[in-house]
Image (cartoon, rainbow, N blue to C red; front, side, top):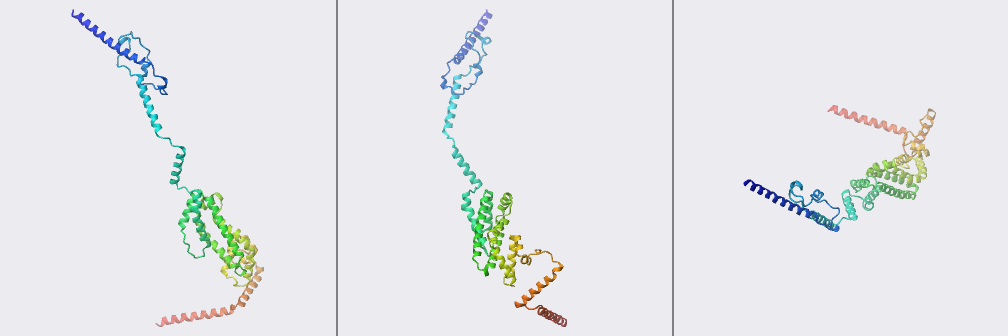
Length: 368
């Protein structure tokens, strides 16, 4: 009797648990069988909700009961509609946030990048070069070209060198070299016109001043532009700045005046001390530096100031050399200079006087 009651109680408990599990599963299946939302409400691309693998399980008949015949027992899977709506709300919030921040336009990006790079790199535009940097160089070159030997020039060599350095680094070497050549060319053309207007008696002296002033200016101009010379003229043009500037004086001054200058030099040579020896030496050496071929115009004149111009002396021409020396001595005597005999006598007298004085001093020291 008791055993039958226990069996009935156990059977009723199992039946109750089967009914409960069956009701839970029916509720879950009904939730999954609800009609899907309209296509417009489904965001693209469609996302697979969590637990989507359970959606792929084939439908189970509601008549089947028990844990052995149905799916395993457990909590019902989440609703697919709730997951889709949550994903849709997240996508809508992200889209709204993206619309709230305006996308940068290409023009604004370019302007920002340009201004930033200009600030960082300190870019020198061609307008900056023409308005700021070249005027400083132009004024300094003017002062160097017109200075007299020994004059003080109130310019900052460090500032000029810095301007040249910055312009070379900013790729303005070609423009700066062109401006320098044009500047010096204009100066030399003015110098040539002034020489043409000079009278013959001042022509040699003024040519000497122009030549010395220009060569002195090159000693300052070339070092100031040494950075441009090293990284542009020597590298790209295969030349040297000093040679180019000397060539400018040759073309614009010396070549235009050589045929007027040389006869005056020969005439001054025939008349002793018409032109000071220093002036004659400066002009002859300067002409030889500008163009050595000009020696052929007056080899005797150049040979007096530049060695190894004439061919070596030969024994057969010694008499001619002696005659030239005698002629020079006669010219010196005619211009008031004493004869060699008088000079020797004076030298001997002076030597004797110096010897007597030294002897007297020695005797006085011995007496003491």
